[in-house]
Amino acid sequence: MSPRKFFHPDAAALTLHRILFALSDPTRLAVVSELKDGAERASGDLLAESVPRSTMTHHLKILREAGVTRTRPEGMRCLISLRRDDVDARFPGLLEAILAHGHSG
Image (cartoon, rainbow, N blue to C red; front, top):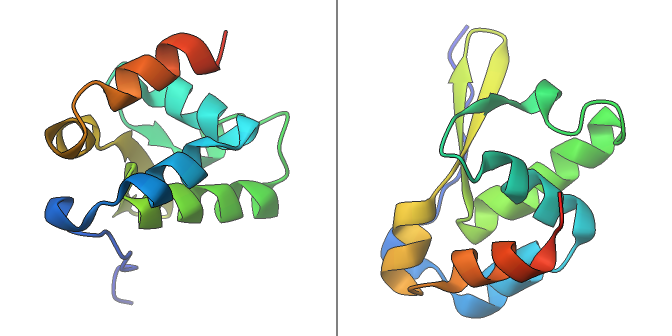
């Protein structure tokens, strides 16, 4: 069985409107807030008790395809991390400003 493959846009292809759309949802903003320390998290551990798995899968896809997160398969799990360096390179200070004012968690 081959590992799952996930689409991740190149850093140069990140667009402000897709990132802002991805971060406009409170659930997705909460996920990014959980990832802001730079550690990888298993997809099942992110907001595990408050969001159904199918809904979380949808939110993670939007974040990944906007270029905000990276998904890495590891065995049966998917590990999610924040693409802070890529987003900061394209839009300096954007994530920091949004995280500072957009979510109190």
